[in-house]
Length: 234
Length: 231
Image 1 (cartoon, rainbow over the protein chains, first blue to last red):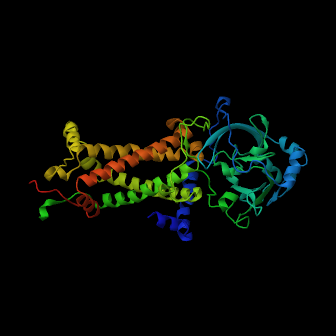
Image 2 (image 1 turned 120 degrees about the horizontal axis):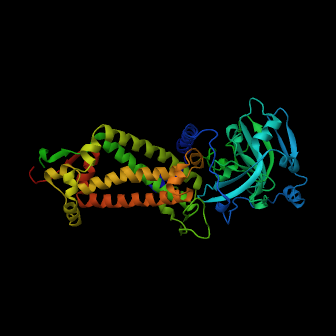
Image 3 (image 1 turned 90 degrees about the horizontal axis):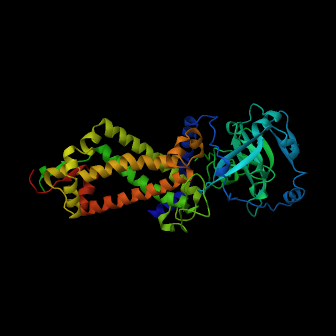
């Protein structure tokens, strides 16, 4: 039986059938949870003493290294794609946008959780500045960290419901200090109602798109291309 | 064997939901162990205190996990697909059990049943199983354990699974309150899984001890041989 199940795991049609549960979970969770329901926020006393940094903790990309040397003074975030007013922002400019501070729980797909305090600009405020076009449905985050030897870089995508959620922020501070490199400096996504891998670190560029079929292998993110769910609500 | 020794003990929908459940629980346990192996430690509370876990092991062996090799993404696919099937199957069973009278007639212990607990325990310890008229119905220990598993353990494991969802935690904060936090929910999910496994082990031992072919036939065809003792 075990061998049979392992053969099924390699069968494309069968894994598609298994994957159909993802759409069901997404639909059920959307029905069951209001768009604006807030993830629980915790108190200072709940902060994790050790907040594990997963994935890349030090991007080797030379351009990133150069930016990090000057504490990201030369870093600029380009926001474009299906936007009426595409533009780029310095870190200083982003810090002047409406911000939010929240103490939330980070759930890793591996199973562990950590509680951290995040301060960042509301993604909704940033999107309002660039004015998404009507066709825009997803926000794609392109990151500095290469994930394999062929140099494929991390990327992620969330839909506009997620992007406009009040707790969705681009964090530049963690636990009252400048966001450390291990946790995604200079800017990382916080999307508190999904699992950790959705929360892209080392964001270099943001693009509004109508669909993500043409990006990477077409599944909406680096880990999604490795077989993980795009909808990481559970 | 004479025809009148055979009694129709399990209705068709009980048999179907039973075997769907066998498939679901096997796959859920094995894919669950695959998922657990991605971080083989348990904690209590909302967060993981890495320095102070309740339990930390090096992981379950490959033969116990689905898929057999380390493959979290695929383990999750198996788990969530069969979790849906498990829940739908359970809801169908529960509805039919309540509406069709199965719960009242076959599972709810009567006052007389409850008075016989001591007797039933002694019988089980001697591996003596009812024959004749008595064998037509579940005994009191069966009733209580089935009710506990169906009414408490199964809902608990589903609830603890749902409480691990950051999305559902946002919509239903009482899930975390009820289960003591997200990491507690994960621990409860794990303990419930092994409690169900313990139930299945005892269930299979009882099947073996009380007549394996007779039991299997009755769960496939519905017909159970109540033995020689005259009705």
